Amino acid sequence: MGLDPRSRARFNLEGASVLLMDASPLGLEILVQVLSGFGAKNLHRALSIDEARDTIQRHIIDLAVVDAGPTGAGYEFITWLRRSKIEPNCFTPILVTAGHTPTHAVNQARDCGADFVMRKPLTPKAVLERIIFISREGRKFVECDAYVGPDRRIKNLGVPGDGQGRRRDDLPPDVGEATQPNLEQDAIDGLLTTLKVKI
Amino acid sequence: MSVTFHTPKRRLTQLLKTPGGLPLAEAIERATKNLGTLAGACVAEVGSVTEQAEALMARKPASFDEAFLTEFYGVVNPPIGLSSICGLDGIDVALHSMCDLLDHLKTTERWDVEAMQVHVQALKLLLHTESSQNAEQTDAVLSGLRKVSQRYAAPTDTPSA
Image 1: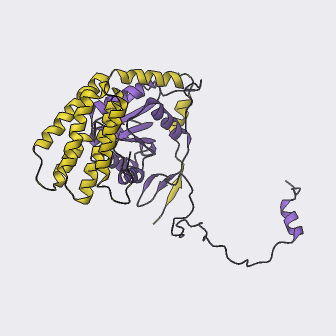
Image 2: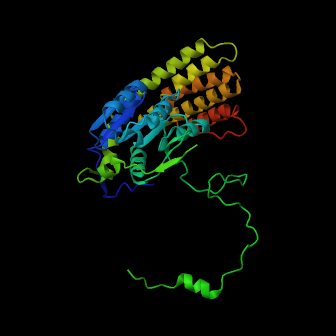
């Protein structure tokens, strides 16, 4: 994900509509200064969930940067947004910022439907890296009763520790005895030979 | 339970590629410069938070009180990230350690006034003297705070810092 700051690559945030939510006015101002520095001109500021909801209902948002806050208000807002069915905003990329990130808070951020969690203090380079990363990644979106948001399975680490897979296509860890004889060489060759096809 | 997978089109991907915009280096430089304008406000805010923490300690309850811990957490969590903007990185580490401590105390329903008090005193010390102290002394203070806050961590917890 690392960006080379010496790179001549350019990016353009001028046309993007960005929602910034932080219950702390100074925290919000930090987000504003970072995004303004990146060239974003259309910034919507929200100090509360109500203000953020109002913005979502009135404007198309291309990116949201939401602070979790000490009470987890940010997570509550993201859960609402992902299930709001307000298109296209319910699919918008969301970066969560958080000052304190114990395991339970990170799990909460992941399960509310955020794309990425960033721990404070924020640096402009790290914020830009994450914005570019989430714009490129093309993760699938999952909708079910228990969760709405980007696919949380970023890494395939195999089946869980107990060896019991949860995906429909997970195979058991132990390989059983062969149930059919090996293929003859002719059959293998037949699978690999290019065939002429009539169109 | 039905599960749907789809790949929504996100406008951000196209917008970032539109002609114009800024080179990465220039964008980072401009954002860093913008943040510099907030340094004074950040120092003032951290000072105010330290005073609020002291005021809270002055009316500390005698035993475990979840509401008090929640209120304290609400005071010391939001300023994390401000100190690094004004070059007082150690204060961010101290605030982080304090949040860990409050979180552990709340989870385990335990009470330790001394542990909280030592964090508040460290905040004051770092705020008023960090720039003149050497890095070694600052590290020693922060390392001590970490030891205090991790004393209450559940065995399976890993420090969040």
